[in-house]
Image (cartoon, rainbow over all chains, first blue to last red; front, side):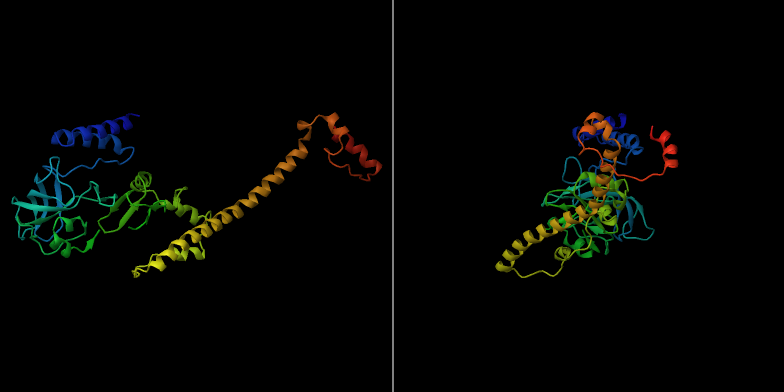
Length: 166
Length: 168
């Protein structure tokens, strides 16, 4: 009973404060996660916002980046959007070093995105491909599946490098 | 537009419904509704969940092999559009659907037939044993059609003396 109430109020809370308080929504989502994880692993997946850690899936040298700004979008970035990120973890000899501020294109998002035919897609994790300001990818390879929403956003180069298009 | 099959329950996913989940190994799972999606997240095996098509086919509840399934095989060669072909295909789809559903319901009916016969036999036996609960004994005695026909058994004198306490 308490679990369902918590999940229900967390769902309401998410819609109300989806964009407003970053810290508050994070706290609420983690608390509901803890209460619900014993019963079911139901997570409310939200946007990619400030301080979201994303995986880097190209060979530019970085391993993990933290989002510092989502360009376009009051609540945050979604699948196919560009973000500004700070490199938190990097390979020892790579094109990008730790602490560098880079642009990235979100290629996999755990939050579902609606397609034009009405269905929804979601991926397993949050992943990003580092790009320059113009939109050209820094790396030369992309790992894992990418959505074909990138074609509409004109990230054709990433699509050509991808090994699988979902 | 393509009609997908739900990965969990094998029902058709029409456009505008359901969620597609793409795993990092690039395997795509289509779900028809959140019920199937949540069961998947719980890591349930569809072959063990009773209401799915996978379970029913595995345990012989539904028809598995039939020539009508050949028509639904996925073919990756695109066909050149031909109006006559399209028209004939649409007519054929209706007919094949009807044939397939008729055969499937026949399969289920045959499967349930043995149980039905068994239940009728048991019911008849119960009626014979407990006819005194249904009809009054006077009515039974008067109306000879309700009670069992009396069979004459030739018994020797010694045996009748033994049987008397048992009849009570």
